[in-house]
Amino acid sequence: MKLYSICALLLAATIYIQTALADTPAGQADAATVKVTLLGTGGPEMSWNRQSMATLIQAGGEAYLFDSGRGVMQRLYETRTNPVNVRKIFYTHLHNDHIEGLPNLWMASWFLLGRTTPYDIWGPTGTQAMISGMQQMYQFDIQHRANAFNDPEALKIKVHEITGESVVYSNSTTRITAFPVEHHDGNPAYGYSFEHAGKRVVLSGDTTYHPNLVKYGDHADVIIQNIIAMSPEFEHKPEMQAVLAKLTTIRQAAKIFNATRPGLAVYSHIVKKGMSGSAGDKLLIARTRAESYLGPLLVGEDRTVIKLTDKIEVLPPADITELPDMDKKAKYAE
Picture 1 (cartoon, helix red, strand yellow):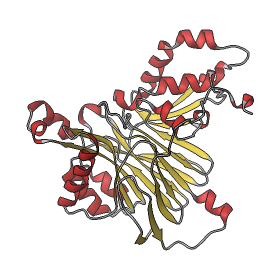
Picture 2 (cartoon, helix red, strand yellow):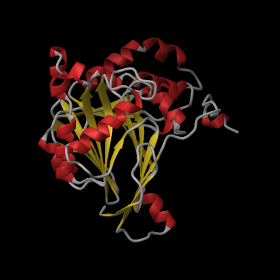
Picture 3 (cartoon, rainbow, N blue to C red):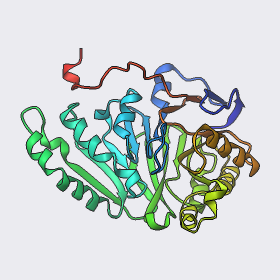
Picture 4 (cartoon, rainbow, N blue to C red):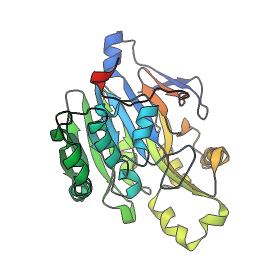
């Protein structure tokens, strides 16, 4: 998607990046639309506005979830996305802050909301053992919640373990490629390239700088990039050196963005020790600009939506005041 003009670029604001694509009929445009929802944009830290890592991509009538960190079920509800429709899940690696929302999503979408379709889950070596452990942990629920209204067949999970750079999923309009990255104590770790109808979204996963980020990120429409930054009081502490070494620093991120020139660069899995709140977010922007990346940049916030049509449109989190409860199966909906 070639950049034509930028109407606005503001943190937590609406961004329209016009492109050179021709107008398409409404039906075709809908089929070609890629919708990215930042469900969780934090790391393992506690934050008032960021849950742990989870990114939902919707395209071609399908929903694809990348990681399922703390709070993913709540964020799906808050973004008006029925968790029943999430049946394909891709893991970048198996650190707890990327997987700990899965049990709630798996179980509650079944007995509470009426999911009837099993899961397909992709992830690195070790994913099958993780899933088997979860199923064992929830044996009581599996045995006692299954009844005439809750078919236990829906709790089945087909695991696809990834062992290297490869196309891990494809259909007639969508292709997902996994590529290795470097996350030290989180290895094996992967990033993903999501392609649909000529649009491309790249998710770095948790990693330090890696050549694959440039290879797959080259002129992507959107790069969702992990980031780490620290205040001076933290960045020199011995304990923090290993943390800095396994995630992407601001200098590394700027290098990646300048090499790839994405339509929009997005920070997610935001780790900012000693840089709390909106002031810390502004520091991320300022430090990135100081490293000479001047292109489109967004510091992700939970529930932000990025829509790719013939432009890139960023919608800030919607108001959830008095949002109706999600408390019943679809067959009981009025």
